[in-house]
Length: 271
Image (cartoon, rainbow, N blue to C red):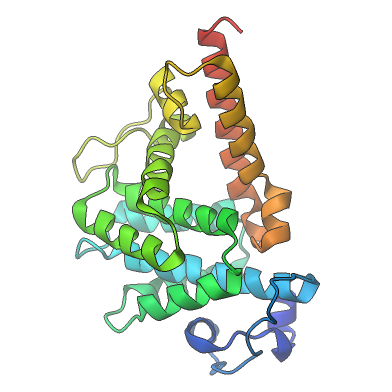
């Protein structure tokens, strides 16, 4: 049974405590503010622990997405559509979608305790860098939903990364990657306006940026970067670390874009 099945089935041993548990409880219309104690030391993930992490990831993703959308003082239609597109990509049923929307709305509220949510999320993930990286990528996608990353969103995302143990160097790398993904996903690149950009074909520059290498990189360096990114975004590996099964399609889309970028570079090099 999935984490959601255990949750709605009344398996309270899988409930989260702390701020994440409180958020999820409100989103579900219950007062589930108490739950299982912290995971045991040592970072070992058995099936139950993984389901707990999946629950935490789902809860934090949509609540923090709401906070990111509100960073510049207003939630744009593009940002709402971005949240809805993630829900659609996850093929959420009506109950899960309603819960995700409720979490997004809580994240927008003035009394949302972002720092406590982030601190608990990092603890629940046991510092798993690939899982946390995926979380940051999703938040970056939300920030770029209206075509660009403004200063308020950038400051907030850097603050989020600070709480999650993500360096500014890694944040900038992920930012470049997400910006480049827009060409491969058909969303278009940012233009600096508040209007969403028109879809366009990915460029060779997009491909290099997505792979995180310079155009002058050797073939071997490009291949290493490609393989590293594929490994980091492999859906099965991410799920084993605590990515909700519902988000496998999100991860699969990213691996598809990584492959597209690599093929574009290979073609340009005559490979």
